[in-house]
Image: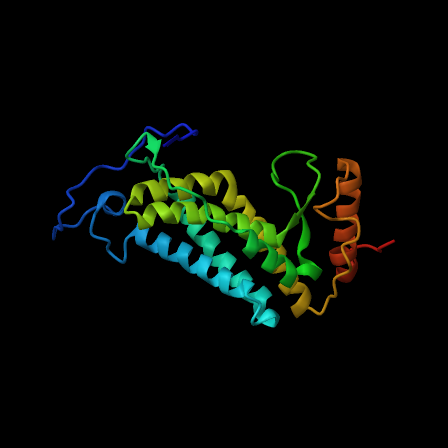
Length: 245
């Protein structure tokens, strides 16, 4: 049993009877504590979107249809971000227990990561700024394959709780990890995928991402310069915003 590290909010949904009733109930009350899983409930909708994302990305990683992988991933990540936005806009979800039940070994996503990296190799690396509100933050190199694998690891953790009948625990985990990790990771991957599809549809070829690699230990200044060069070559030049040296 591992103790949850983040401090829980004192805000909690009102408890309700687990027995079905014909009287209308507030949506949040039903979704957090009802034992009967109404297909229209928030919990069921979120879990369905998350499970659908995991299944879809796993299928894409098999590489059976590489030509459609990028637009398909764009669609799936976009739909996942909608689920994340709903979790983010929801009131703080408070689990029933102080300590998180032990789930056993976490899902191994290394094979998925490697398959995605092999399939996306020419365009896997992109530049990202983690916090747009932190001034003068240098871009860092990221990989779409790493992002998707990490997101699935987070989502699978909550899905294990959900499948074990711990609905509130699953929702708490998905909401907390959305704010702390997978939300920003998924949104970064979404921007990269959207940019790739835009380059394809607008017939704007991408240059090789020389000097921008997550495997290299670049100093902040060098990384910022490399990222700026890549952005200038890929975006500013083709759009006629400035000349590329």
